[in-house]
Length: 137
Image 1: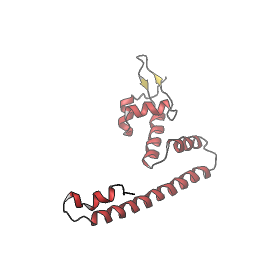
Image 2: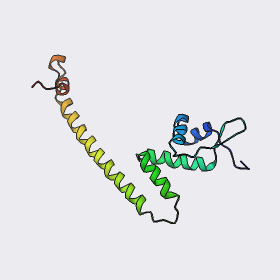
Image 3: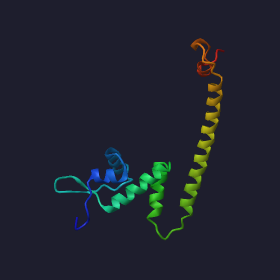
Image 4: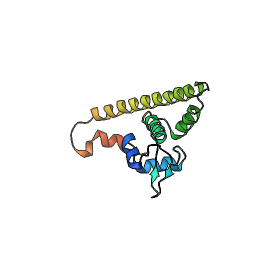
């Protein structure tokens, strides 16, 4: 392994705010390269693992899917390529985010309307329960 600085899985987890099981899962699905092992059979992570996991975590925080992250990582390794594909992925993701925001805003308006109908009476007359109950046909 040479003179590379070795990180334990716990150190890697703490540094990136990632659960240890999630790190192992990222290895299993190929997002994170499996590290070398120490003579005691412990995982020996490097700064490259830390950098890649930090990228994955930031992308997940921004809501990118694992498939999108896999694609972004693959493109990022081709430093001399145009970033047009990366831009397309990010713009597509932004469209999805804006659609979700619009749907949540509509949901918020609907909930506000239902809550606004509450008269704080008996459950039998509760407008919220009435709005949630299936309508009789």
